[in-house]
Amino acid sequence: MPKTFLITGGAGFIGSAVVRELIANTDHSVVNVDKLTYAGNLESLEEVADSPRYAFIHADICDAPAMHRAFAEHRPDVVMHLAAESHVDRSIDAPAEFIQTNVVGTSVLLEAARGYWKALQESDPEKAAGFRFHHVSTDEVYGDLGECEERGVRSEGQSGEEKPLASEALTPHTSQARSALTSPQGAHKPAGRSLFTEETPYAPSSPYSASKAGSDYLVRAWQRTFGLPTLLTNCSNNYGPYQFPEKLIPLMILNALAGKPLPVYGDGQQVRDWLYVEDHARALIKVATEGRVGETYNIGGHNEKANLEVVEAICEILDELVLDEGRGVRSEENNPSQAKRLPLTPHRELITFVADRPGHDRRYAIDAGKIERELGWVPQETFETGLRKTVEWYLDNREWW
Ligand code: NAD
Image 1 (tube, protein in one colour):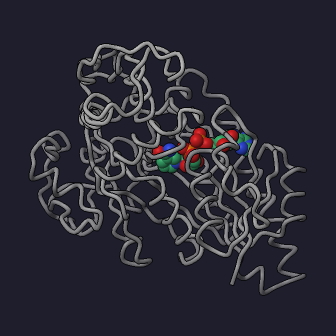
Image 2: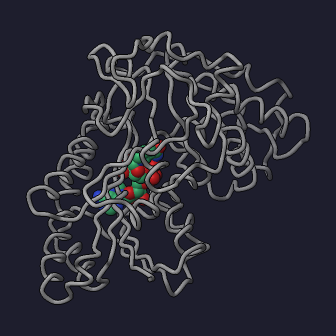
């Protein structure tokens, strides 16, 4: 049965992937509510803009009357809330906007959803019974996995087991670990490592993750206190096409193409789990339509990589595509028409270590077993296939960036 999704932040990186997936591969309709901050770009939605199943509302989620109007006019079956300030470095420079959008904005949206849902219970009980509020969050709310281990947090199915400390738990540079960690099905998850589960206590480190943790708590409170039918997902780092080039992977690709330094924080050994954005979009739609009300689902790719390893992998792909095959142009201007070709040195020579980010967490890693078992979701891309697609997309879509 086709549903109407009200998606906040649909012009952003992940939101636009969800909107494209819903319009291209389902019968559902989308109302996209977005303020169009620096991170929102309607060009990411060009392929769906003319669909009769797509509508756009230019609005701030902190604007209560605008949110109430959006619900009344579009009568959604599902709210998928992605609008947020999302960049950790910006949250350290200027936290206020993060509190405003991520915490206050979420509370405004929850109240608009609650008012709409209450009215729906009178006017259309069947529609009210199917209504869902799905909040999209991050694994960063769990904090630093190394510290979790020191606090004695155990991963699912590992109670009582001896577990290595984070520093010795993962050896991403060994070929054995590499193959074990890149399985899309997670069939070869190495035993004995601790991972974030849905029960891991929150311990956010940055203003960004603290503001997201605050919004998660609000969603849980609206479920428990008011009975609002909510769903919550916490996902690891996303990468893929249409990501604003302030985040690690697009920043490195664009800097490398411009022959600029590739800045790596600290020793580059901070470990993150990486998920291709289209896999995340498919997971979100599955949770929103099939997830159990009130539940939290962790989403991840079983692709744990040290940041330096990610940057080196990008350099390898660029060496092959740009230096060996002559695809794209490596130029100072990043603009093929004014290209002043740079010397063909290997891209990894551009890697430059810079002072570490304050409060930088060492390791995040997700146990995505619950969504795999309950909803049958598995990622389709490995890190290798997804990263290659991503680099190729940035080479082929210079107008977008
Ligand atoms: P993004 O920064 O690319 O996009 C955010 C979008 O929200 C933009 O379109 C922006 O215009 C919009 N927006 C910001 N403030 C708004 C406001 N006040 N009102 C309405 N719209 C507003 O973010 P993203 O990377 O696509 O992340 C989307 C969501 O997923 C966020 O909630 C983020 O916390 C979460 N998340 C992101 C990642 C990741 O790796 N990017 C991982 C896990 C979870």
